[in-house]
Image (tube, rainbow, N blue to C red):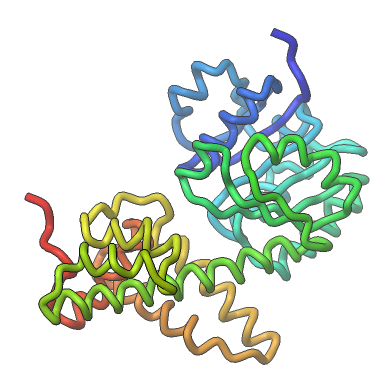
Length: 300
């Protein structure tokens, strides 16, 4: 097998593992670093496991990171044994995590000072999209770096947009998470209302799918709420983190986001009741707790 580029991938969780697997399936040599056990599918794909992020950066020309939060990215990039200490001039760092746009701009400047390019490229589409290679990828950074990495993005996603400079990809992801959260809250309220009024929520959803209220959230997460399938594709605690970024940004910008604040509080109700590791469609449980009425019974 003829190997392509030398790529690095750091962070092999629910999203990162299938994304890395698609890069490897694209014929590229892959160097990885993860704190957890290497998933069987990646081990079988003959990736090279490195003992540090630094080692990954030393061996790869383009390094991807996919970790939970801003402090995690900072530690992976600039902590002891981090990516920055292994970079040499001309390499590219691509952060696909969902983190602070403000901190992202600072990270980019530090990487640029080493003679390397930096792209922030957060994604939307969940585990299903990561496995299928259909993620939406929102990119911030220089066009020359984007053009170089775009064929790799195309292995992982379908809707790929260079939004603007560094930080703009993260800003777009925050906007995405606002819209998704408010749609989940809206579908949750509608189904709780319909169910408590005595209507069959499955038939209500079916009827709404044919009208102006139809949405991807109603289609996918509405079905989860009815079937009670809350195994995580995207966990509540991660969406909480993203809404925290939105509200912090809003304070800095002097912008009011009242509906976002409300959705964040519903997620906090879930977290306070031990539900933070469920899929974010389980936000409906916050409304069910307040209504003392589930949308549908739990499966036996």
